[in-house]
Image 1 (cartoon, rainbow, N blue to C red):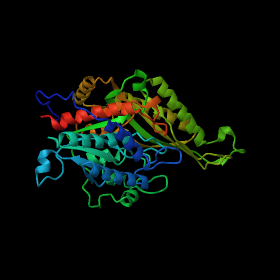
Image 2: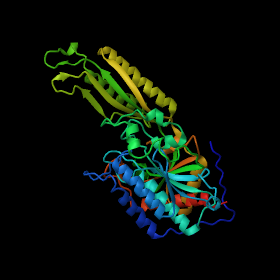
Image 3: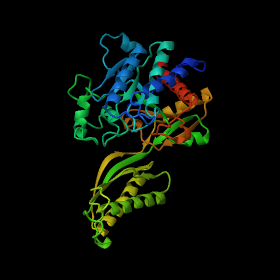
Image 4: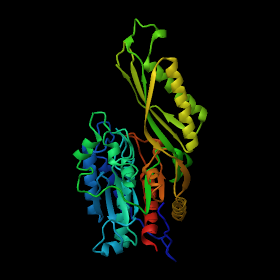
Amino acid sequence: MTEFDVQPQPGADKTNMSLPELELVELQAMLDWLSTYGADSQGGVTRLLYDNAWCEAQHALAKQMADKGLAPAFDQSGNLYGTLSSKEEAASDEAGEATNPIVTGSHIDSVVHGGKYDGAYGIVAGILALEYLHKHFGRPKRTLQVVSLCEEEGSRFPFAYWGSRSITGVTAFEEVQHLVDQQGVSFSEAIFGAGFGPECDLKPAAQTYGAFIELHIEQGQVLERHSRSIGIVSDIVGQRRYSITVKGEANHAGTTPMSWRKDALAGAADMIVAVRRIALQTGEPFVATVGRITAEPGVGNVVAAKATFSLDIRHVRQEDLDQCWQDMLKDFRRIAADDQLRLEWEEHLSVTPTPMNEKIQQDIQEICECEQISYLHMPSGAGHDSQIFHPACPTAMIFVPSQQGISHNPREFTTEMDLMNGFRVLVRLLYKYGYED
């Protein structure tokens, strides 16, 4: 892990750093503006990796970065960076890539019919934070950067965290180029069509960070129910995603006795019931979700020959996550054998539980206490890019409340006061790491 040792400047007093009301207005206004890229008929935002709305949003953000005094640049994956160079790097004629910058940001992509805060808030707040710091304090002593990560959700292709995985070198283009979306478009077609990919003239995605700080909406109800304004994330759950395929035999619905059937859909249904039973027996904080199921041939009077369902399991302890998957797989195999079915599965995502950096957590807590903002140390039940960055650099997450815990939904909402509280904490944290000795 990269060494992270930014000490406070002796005698520094930041308690009177003022954040004008202008930032509050522009923060919400910029979120509203960004949500117009991919706005859909259901009142939400659909912005999928490399689609037209995604391309338009990333290039519009690049212009915003430039207008606000940041140096914008894309990499070959389509990640977008806005850099506020340090005094030393700005003065050097030979200054190239920033050396281990302190980075904030989040992801630009959305789920289908999603909200306007998920991912976007961290990007917008990061851009405005660097603009504010540059305007009021000049260039930093250590380079600061905001990144609009190209993808996190896995909404278009059966793979998530492409932005952070490509930056950290965890996943190479060759490993995902064959993936196909629901319209039959391959990953390689999509990335090249958007003007990115390993053959373009942009810089490679891989780089190193001094630290990564992600400001994000909670997407749950914990902060709201505890009446706290800031969540200081202690760890992020580990998760796995699978496609489970059950194969049987198509046959006539009226002439095939129940006991003779090889009904793939009935077998899948029993497996889904087993998923729920194991999750309830395991107890919190383990969660398991089947969010999608398809059947073939998909005809009302034909016994299904094939059924495929998704499986998402999450836990904060790796050993429990492993055990739950083994318990489910054991039941799947038993059900398949009893019903004379064939079972196949494919793992699309495997992320281990991830602790956040303790030093940055402590700094966030001290800022909250200085600002008299209520806070709560809490785990994240959702996966985030921060867990991909964690092995590569010191990483932290800051949460703000989500009203009624609603997210991935057009009704996703965070109040202006809560948005501003998160912004204040981020500005102070970036000031500490970028401007203090």
